[in-house]
Image (cartoon, rainbow, N blue to C red; front, side, top):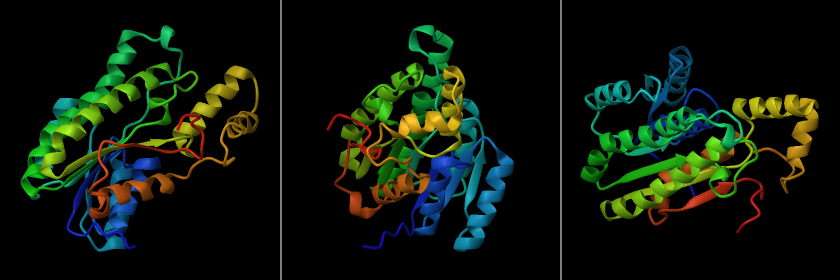
Amino acid sequence: MEISLQNRIALVCGASQGIGYAIASQFAYSGAKVILLARNETKLNEITKTLCIKTNVKHLYVACDISNLQILEIKVKDILSQIEAIHILVNNTGGPEPGLLHNSTTEQLEKAFRQHILSAQKLIELLVPGMKENKFGRIINIVSVGMREPIENLGVSNTVRGAMGSWAKTLSRELAPFGITVNNILPGYTLTERLKSLINNRASAKGVSFEEESLSILQKIPTKRFAKPEEIAYLATFLASEYASYINGTSIPIDGGYLSSI
């Protein structure tokens, strides 16, 4: 089975590194025209140029802080004025800072809610009309296994991930009649800069080495390794394709068997 995203335009958030970068790249290699969104304009410019050369397609980028809804709206509207419509949306943003929930502030929760739920809502407000017109849409949310089982010391993240799951499920039922699917990918421990930072923080708090803390996490994963960002991207590419037209309202873990629930 060869997956093709020819004639599709995708907006991928958090595309300058990690999982977002892997998804944007895989979409581009599968034939899609990709709009990469992130804060770091220097990185975005470099990545976009490289993808344009490798795929012979003119990809675009949007440099902005996704939590600034006003700027986000202005910049996405500017992109929409240049193209017909965006068919695929990947909601993917950096996770909230680690910490216990009862020690977190309302400001931290509000920031996380804006960064995840409100930014995603703003994007569907802008993109769903075009998806409806084309009778095709894919909304893919990169969430976390923390949506199913709370992860230690990620109180705010666990909370907002759960909200994202409910948001997506509700949306999937509303948009299905228009040929638009909404699905969540729940990555487990994936080898990104964020994971390295989390491991460093845990190691420092416990007074152990990075390697020791990594091994303690790996003991909880049946496959005994961390996921690669590309492995998340492969599923995202499938969900974005025609082959996945009857997959809707699901939350699919890619966690090496980490979750204890079915």
